[in-house]
Length: 116
Image 1 (cartoon, rainbow, N blue to C red):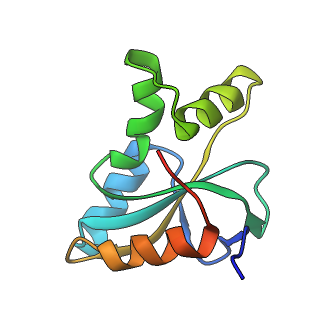
Image 2: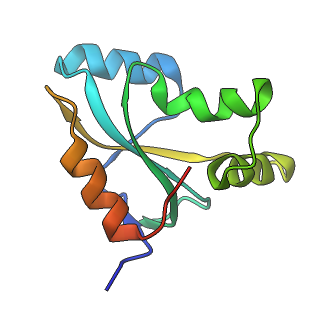
């Protein structure tokens, strides 16, 4: 059975680029798996997208909708949240020395259909 809620209690919540970059430098691992979720912030949140990133990748989708929006599920959710004054919750599921394709796939399978 697929879980629709993400346990974010022990995950790194990203609030801004400087915070993320400082954390990456402090741990020395540059690859990460991230999860974008609906508010509100609780111990368990509902994800709508899982991805792999380096640097500021976790913020790229919100920037994309301002420059070149698409009709993707991910962009529609972000736009809808912003339209009602809410922010996307951003979590790093884990940091890695390599590109963690298997962890990304595992989370996508756990949460069901999280497509572009």
